[in-house]
Image (cartoon, rainbow, N blue to C red; front, side, top):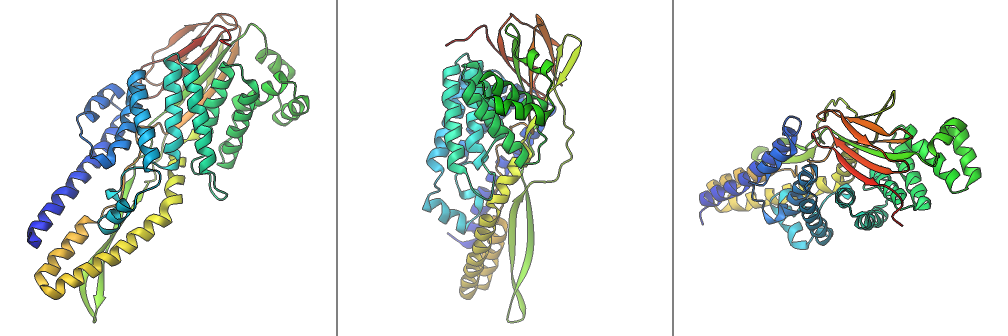
Length: 427
């Protein structure tokens, strides 16, 4: 094959990858104006390359969940989970491919947060599909994964939202001791990331300490959080209904490529161009929205538990040194390849230089159908109904039977209400 033919073929292959990744990024941002169902239909027309299939299944599964097609969501997300588990230790072959061409040659094995977040969505999919036992399996797997990912100098892969969802599921299953532990972990991660501890988390810690008879801890929380006896009595009233309200707000930011082109000098002359391309997250000003529960005369708003944009940046920051090392090492390899080609034929060297410059591309793939913010509110009430409001959701009433438990989820990009109802303890 001639150098010209090689160049044309390389450009066709690389442009195909670039167009696909750009299209997916555009679709994710279109969720701000289009429904998950419409975006899902468009995404399903794309045929992913094998190396992109885990990410494709993550995004497809997220949209299926938001479309309330829980069985399909479970299938897609489970496939993604299994594929990422296989790829978690990147193969030598893929490392070589990425080292000689660009970072997008690797199979998408998931960021640390992806490896945990997939369990979040699977747990919720099972729960809203009326299978709390399978939801419990997923939260246990999320806990195991977070323990595997623990690092002394980083919170990458440690999700407050995973511990929150675990706590809610444990409460549904009357495992208050495990629920308290999960709320504690959620609180610790929120504080570590500088997220204000919400009143709902404070009340959960205090309420469960009392229910479990851990009175020293109860007194400590009550004093530290300034919680009154009246609040505790209301939260622990026997015939009250409990509402665990999760809200997904916005759409997480997509990665962008940042690149520079620099000339290299040899024997005091500019002999070739070198391009360095790195992934980054742009600084985007985001207006945080909320969802609301109308309880009698009171309006209760959801508060942020996890900023998904923040954890995505944490993952990239943790990976950045390795990406930079691979990128600079690849630049040296490409430089040597051009020099060797140039020695045989100056035109061949020129064509090779053009190919190495155009083939350098940052890996901007990410699970970008996720919400930008995960929020939460807890309500304990003796009212016989409440009303739910969100950005695209018209006011919806939910009837409450005494002592019932409800998990409710809304999304700012969907007009659907997600609702799991439990009339009494199932164990």
